[in-house]
Each structure stands twice: as structure tokens, then as C-alpha cells.
View 1 (cartoon, rainbow, N blue to C red):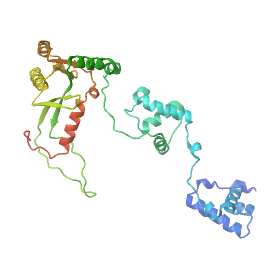
View 2 (view 1 turned 45 degrees about the vertical axis):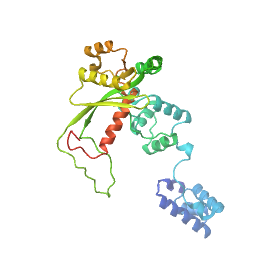
View 3 (view 1 turned 90 degrees about the horizontal axis):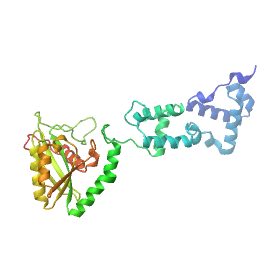
View 4 (view 1 turned 90 degrees about the vertical axis):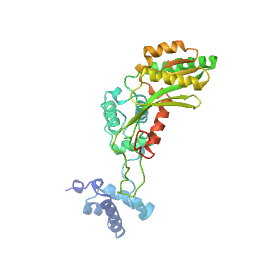
Length: 316
């Protein structure tokens, strides 16, 4: 009977048992037991016994301590360097929907799915996490963009339309302003606050709900003009804001707005024609709020309100 038929696969044993086996083999070897006898008695492969003995002879007891389990760096990478480069490029250039995957963003499950789709390779989540870290990819909160947005129109506006607006403004000595509307509510989600572990902090808020709206314009150099109003924006409220803006500006105003319907009302376009020596209005591509710096102003305002004491009334 050959002992090799009874050999154990020591790789399936726990690290603690593997360490014990190595120390036991060396102790018995020091007492004069041959490697062949050790292999037969312990059910461990003869070649494995020889490897342990040689390691001990070269490095002593420290050589018996098991290092990190797993394959070498290049061995444990399931994707080739070329495949890794292709995947990284895809994660930068494409979105999951473009790859016919049912995910909004490139999370681990989505990346696992696209790897399987492209190369029929299953990558464990832990391995993928290590790979993403090695590539310099980090989880980030996404910016939202409307799917109705026309990327070509956005690119054309940035490369062609806005440079023309900027040039004309310089020729006329006009000021460029960016306008936008926003709503403010007393039910905003407040930020985090420190407290002892297990003791959630409490913010006292009013049970009554109320809101207020604001239209604001921000100058390229950072100046801000704003007007508060209740209910919805109307053409007459918009014209009132225009009048206040051109009065305070002192120079001709180039105002850039988004494409709300009220901005194109007949009463508005008619008024603009009569006052074209004082103000000219331009419009952003549809569904492109990220082009408007006034959106940052709105975000800062809401963030400040959420970190301040809750309003008890609309007047506050």
C-alpha cells in the first residue's frame, strides 16, 4: 500500500494546525526521525516535509512561521495587466446602463458583473476591493444629471456659445450674471453632531411646515443679488427682479438663466426687447444645472440653514 494515497492536503487545514504540524515535523526530525517516516506517520506529503526541513535549516524557527496565505501578487490577480487597464478605462468612460447593466453607478456588484460580461471571470468582492484601492478608485457621492440632458448641446454651449457671450459682454462693457431660483424649507435634514456612542442627538423642530422661495443672481466676480418671494415664480415677479438687478448693476447686464417656462413668457420677452440697452438674457441648455454657478450658491445656502438653529416660523 502506498502512503501517498493517504496523504492529507494540508492547505485545507487551519493556519494554527498547519503551524503545529510544521513545528512537530521539525521537532521529530531533530530527534532523528527520517523524512520518509514522518511522511508516512503523519500523512503529510514527502515533498512538503522536505520543504519544511530545508526552510528550517536555512532560516531556523522563524522560517516555520506561516506568512500571509494566498498567491503571490501577480498570481492572485485574475485579470491581466491589459485587461485591468481596459477595465479602468471603461469605468471612467462608461456607465452601467451603457453596458446594459441594471445599476446606476459603478459599485462592486456592477464591476463584478461587467468583468463577468467581458471576460467570464468571477472576482471575489474582497479581491475587487483591493484592486480598486490599488488603482486609486474611491467611493464617491455622485453628482446628479438629468437623463434628458443633451451632452452635445452642453459641449456646444461651453465651447462656442458662452465664449461668444463673454466676448460680447467685454465689447459692450456689460456684466455677466448667472440667475437661478431655489426653495427653502424648514424641514431640511440637519447635519451630523458629536454625541456619546449610543446617544443620538435630538434637534427640536417646529411641527408646522413652511417654505420660502428665492431668486438670486451671482456675478462672475462673486457679487450676489437676491429676492425672496412666496408661492411660485411668475413673469411679473421675474420682471421685478430684472428691474432691481439692472438698477443696482449700473451697467448693462448679461443674465444667464436656465430654461424654465416662465423665463420665456410673452410679457418677459416683450419687456426684454424694450430694455435691450440695459439687459440681455441668455439661456443654458435644457437640464444642465451643473453649468450654472448659482447652483453652488443655492447649495451653500441650504447647507448653512441645515447647520443653523431650526426656524420656528416663516419670519425666522
